[in-house]
Length: 217
Image (cartoon, rainbow, N blue to C red):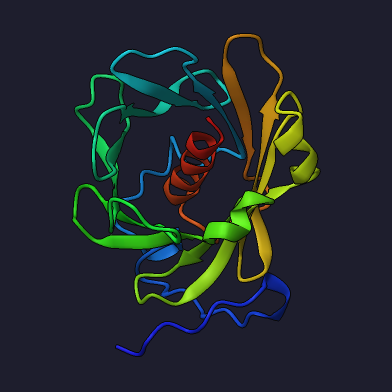
């Protein structure tokens, strides 16, 4: 396997072409359910208070639950599973950090049913102090996209009451836009995937959005 290309700002980076038979492009996948993950938009709601773990739920436009994540509060090395149901009987994706502590943290995302590596998410460390930024890597460690905080990120560091926004791009094209909705005593966001057009597996986009929201919390 060839070593990963060096990271560069999005405007200068040449992205590798995703493999059509695996990873983040659903056209060739065998395990992607069309129904729950074919909607143009979703709502993401996160519990504000938690004793044993913070819970995140993803809803379809009709209000039906499509994904559930419970993030443990006390775990040395980050591992979490995205489920299709709140009873946690139908796993979708498994997210695992490569190290317990790292400046440029890498999290691998696996298909929970096949064990196949879908892709990886790498934070940009110190650069994320001003603007949260993650590189999206394909199963071959090649950079194929980016997730980045949008808007007045520096002002939000000083005034947390300002609402957050994040854009997810694949091959330089936006596939998802995540936007925070103002709520008292709750965290709520919208995921607009109307521009995706089948380029990214919606489950992987949900994993990206959940990690961004967890970093926000």
